[in-house]
Structures are given as structure tokens and as C-alpha cells.
Image (tube, rainbow, N blue to C red):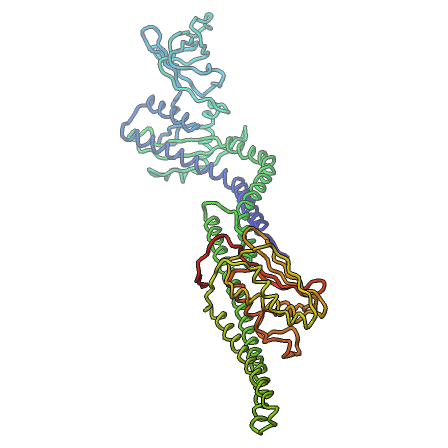
Amino acid sequence: MKKRSVTTKLFAATSIFVLVLLGSILIGQKLFFERYYQSSKIQDLTTAVEGFSYTFAQQPADRNTAARYIGTIMNEYDASAAILDKRFQNLRLEPYYIDIKVRDKTVTIRITSDGTQSGDIPQKLNAGDIITVEGFFIDEQNQVMKPVTITKSAALAAEPNSGHSQVTGVITELLLPDQRSYNPYYQNMLVEQALREWMAQEMDSLSQLGEGQAAHMKWSDPWSGVNYMLVLERLRSGNEDMSYMFVMTSLQPVSEAVSLLTSYFIYVVPSVIMILLLLSFVFSRIVSKPLVALSQLAARMANLDFTVRTPIRSQDEFGELSRSLNILSSNLDDTLRELTNANTKLQEDMQEKARLERLRKELIANISHELKTPLGIVKGFAEGLQDNVAYDKRDSYVAHILSEVDKMNALIMDMLELSRYEAKAVRLNRSNYLIDEQVRKAVDSFDVQRSSKQLIIEFTSEEHVRVTADARRMEQVIVNLLSNAIRHAFEHSTIRIALNRISTEQYSFQIDNNGPQLSEEQLLRVWEQFYRGERSRDRKSGGTGLGLAICRHILELHGSTYGVENTKNGVSFYFTVDRSIGEVGDNNVHE
């Protein structure tokens, strides 16, 4: 099955979620926004009517006061309103007015809905402005005027038309309709028509309205086609003339808004989708990046690679998990390394145990072999003496018995000495002495063996080479190596001994012969006990097989570097010894 990354899954899930959310918003806006707007309008208008009803129930007011309250509501809620009597007749309260101070009296300019257009009233009138009004008074005291023209000017206009009056004064108070996208005066004129049509349809149900109840209906202006929301509620007023309040507001703004939003979304939605998809991709990368890093770390850990570390350093759950995995990886890495080392050490111990077991068996076999032959010889000669051999052979038999006893004694002494070295029970007695004289004496001691094979021994060295070592033990090493070189040298060949300074602190002893070379196995095992290069084990030339093993222990106690290697014509043994720097005391113990 094809693997899908967490980034792709997260991007797909986020994108689908965002697109579903955006689609839900668009569908909801298309289906429910207009309905929600209408419901909100009804609630606002109902609240306004209830507030008006409560105010007038507490303080019954006259028509002028009621008109001014209605005007405030109309401006605040962008609506047209009317007060109805108990027969649903419009009391025709005119809410809009301008009070001006004309010399010693106040003149009220009554702004009616009939015949008034938005352009008839100067824009942005405020208290303190000076205006000139041409019209006619509708009361006997000449204090209420119905305007024909209103001019924002401090100077008197031209002579008024026949039958009209003209006044100029300072505005003290005013209530005018707010500037809207439609003609508020025209909307106010529609109150009568909307109310008649509603009454014709719902007269019986409307008459049953009680206090605190409201009725509403959607109505369309047949001339303009604009939709309106109508609200009617009974008032809790003590004034019998004011029984109902009728409010209507235009639904044109929301219709236009929905239409504009639909057109707007056609252009905006593709860009919004692209932006949301891009943000979803970035978001998915940000969230999935640490997950991918942690997954890679886990995969490496599954393959037992605990050296990798995650770079996550954030202070959140990912960062905490990363730090925990890093600690786990480090601990597992240390544990695995310890187990590997322990396993390696165990394998080495097992190999060493197997080697020691092999050496033990070889040692037993070698000891048995080395002791069996001389014991057999001794027994044979002893039986001859017991059988009363000829008198002239008795001395020869005794000599052979003593010779074999000496060989067995030498073997036993070498074994005892080797066991002391292996038990770390040997004490070195270091001193400063001339090793070149020691080598010359050792060479002179082998004159008989050298002459029998007609060998030439060449020794090259500085004069008076003084070293720090155990003289007796070092002599044992030199004698063993010289004996081994003579034993395996070809007749009429040359043995070369060199004593050279290799540093300010050490000399190197090297002895080369011309003879058979050693195999790879022999080079590795030549320092082992009872190991002899000649497999035939000739008792006259083979030795006990313990000499080089003893040499190895002596050289290791001295801290020397030693070894054996094949040369062009034979074999070369070498070791190092410390140069004498000053007087050294005796009885230095090796531990």
C-alpha cells in the first residue's frame, strides 16, 4: 500500500476543514443572513416600541411630546413610525421641527411628510445656525409655520410670494431626519398605505393584540418594489387616543448588502481559497515537521542507531518529547556500547579460556612426554644394573642415568621458575651494569656449540653500554636467545648480535641467524611454553621448550618491547632495555 506522509494528510484535512467552514459561511450567509437581519430588525423595533410604551405609561404626554419621541425613535432605528388610536387611525403626529428665535419669540417650523423632499431642507443644520424661512403660519399666535422654502442665510431673502410670510432667526432646537440612502419623507408617506393594506388582511387578528404583544409583517411597496418590515404593538399608555404604535423600516439595505456580498464573493472567494490553502500547507508543514523528525529518529533507533539527535528545541509537547527521546537515545547508546564492550570482553574471555584450556592440555601432554622419555631411559639402565650387567658397563649406565636425571631436574626447575613468573611472584633486583661485557661473556660460554657447527658470531656495540636491569635475569634472556639462535643456525653461517642506542633512554638488543624461517603460526606461538619450532622434538637439540616463555615474562617485568620476525636469510629476535641514567637501588619489586 502506498505510503502517505503526515504532511499530506494534515494538509488535506486542514484544507477540507477550511473549505467546508468557508462554504458553510457562504451558504449560511446566502440562506440565513437576510432572515437573521429581519429578525434582528423586528427585535430592535419591538424593543423601541416597548420602551416608548413604558415611558408614556409612567408620564402621559401630549401630542407634541409624543411626536418628538417618535422622531427620536425614527432617527435612531432608521424607521418610520406612527401613533394609532383604538380604531387604528393614524393620529398624524409630525415629529420633525425646527425652533428658531425671532426677536422676542420662538417660532416652530413644522416639517411635514406631505410634499417635503430631502433637498428642501439645507444640509447639516445645527443649533446656532441662522436661517430664513418662507411659508405661512398655521396658528393664530403666529408661532407655528409650515415652510415653503428654508434658506441657510443671515440676510433676508427677496420679497416673499403673495400670501407667504418670511422670518429669519437663530436655530435653538431641531429634530430632522438623518441623511439616508432613501427619501425619509417618502417612506413616512407610505405609512398610511402600508397600514391600510395590513388592516385589510389582518384586521381581526390585529384587534386581538394585548399589551406586550407585537405583530409583524413583510410588505412590499407596489411603486418602488422596496420591501419593508411592519411592526404593530399595543401601548400601555393612559392616553386613550394613543392605543397602538406602528413602525415600518426598509429592508432594502440588507437586500442590497446580500446582493453586493454575492457579487463580492464571486471575486474574493477564489483568492480566499488560495490563501487558505497556502496557509493550510504552511500550517501542516509547521505541525508535521517535528513529527517527521521524531519519526526519523524512531526509525534510526529501531535500527539500533542511537547516535542521532533531533534538532527540535521548542517549548511545547514536541520539544518535551524530543528531549525525552534524545535522553532515551543517549542512554540506549551508552547501554548498547557497554553491552558491546561486555560482549567483546566475554568473547575475549571465552577465547582466552579456550586457549588456556588448550595450553593446559598441551602442557600436560608436553610434561608427560618430557618426563616419560628420561624415565624410560632411567628405568632401562636401572633394570640393566639390577640384572647385573657386565662390570665394564656399569659406569656407563650410571652416567646415562645421572644425565637423564639432570635433564629432568632442569625441566622441573624451568617449570617451577615459569610458574613463579605466571604467579607474579618474581622480584627484580635492578642495578646499573655494563650489558656489553655481559653479552661478550655469554658468547664466550658457547664456544663448544659454536665450534661444533663452525659458526661465526659477530657482536657490534658501543663501549661501556650501561643499563638499568636485573643482571641475572637479563643474562638468562641473552643466553636463551643465543642458545636458540645457535641451535637453529645453518652450519658454517654467521650469527650477528647488535646492541644499539634507539633513544636517550633505551638500547635495543638484536640477534640474527641464518637458518630456517618461521611460519605465521610459529611467529605467533614461539613465546608460549613447551612450544618448539621443530615438531620432531629431537631431545639433543630441541631444549625443554620453556626458555622463550621464561624470557617473555622477564622482558615484560622489565617493561621491554620484544618480538621476533623473519629476515631475508633467517630469524631475528629483539628486545629493548632501559639505559642507565643514575644509580638505582636494589630490590625494586614488580607488582
